Length: 142
Image (cartoon, rainbow, N blue to C red; front, top):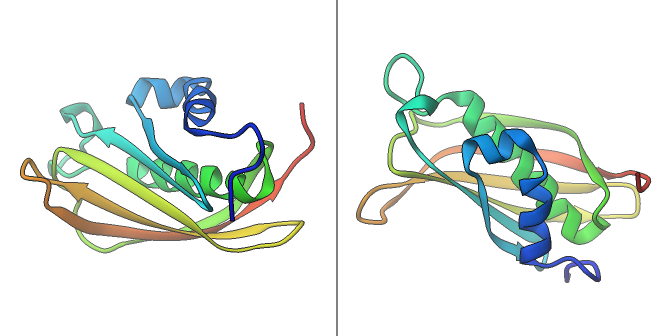
């Protein structure tokens, strides 16, 4: 599976940058194509919840966007998340959140996508903190 024509890493980052909330979080697309997408967010104090862990809403946001970007590699640039579920496995701590999503199945009307969310420590050690799965739907061009 390859990215749709005209979709590449730079175009994916431009699309992400067009989302004000993504700019606020400083999200970046670090991989895009071949049925997959990876997003990263630098963890900072403003993104923590009251116990000092990365807020679950940040993990959900990252999963939602990674799922949709991965689905876009199969369905084209005009897609939306149809729905997703997320399972939090352990508190998220570390310096970077990485959400890597991969298309499990794609048809004409939807893509089913899985996302693994890891936190990275200062030494690069990755810890799985959540998993998500969802559907991505094609929509008409604006």
